[in-house]
Length: 251
Image (cartoon, rainbow, N blue to C red; front, side, top):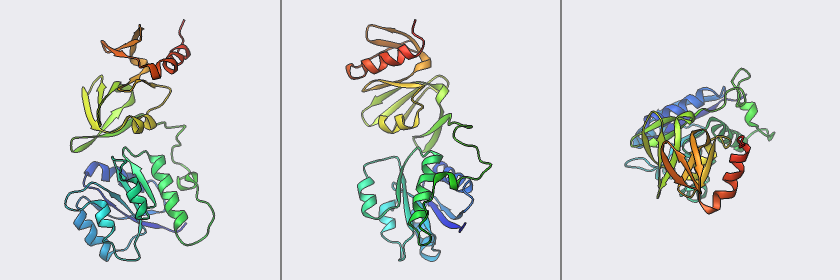
């Protein structure tokens, strides 16, 4: 299989390391450079062409969108990585191959790589995600995800699913209440978090609350108690939540 050269540009070291680890797990991906500074990355790419660049949008001095417009032709395939979904339309206007929302799961990363390979000149046979994973790599069924990474201040923090009590919406932020790590504030949407959390273990009960089903202490009069706090069950979610409770061995 033909090798695919790539570079990573992300001012958050942990985010860059996560992508570098993902690249190392794909046999044909060859990481040529990893940069935390946008200008250093731009200088490298001007002299060292690669096939694909994984680039963060929010970087100091030069954004990912501005940097892409400065790349010499022929430009590499671009995969934007960001915690913000409002730039999706603008990124596709720049012919980006894909747009990955943080926290980035490995299977979503593989989908982006498959898109890039499919877009390159050569045989037109479809590229599947399964074909990108080494034969001895753990599959999603044998090694299910047990945590997510969220942006907290200037770092990506690992949050184990088992540790989550409930998640509280605070305008554009989410406050994750955990059993052992206290409260973690992150700039993220409920929609994105719900895509990552296992649906059989978590439930949205209100426009401002999502709870871990195993952490519910009791349910009473349109409210649930988690970690000693009573949380409201919204009208929109009342019926679906009642069905979940019935499915969890209600007597």
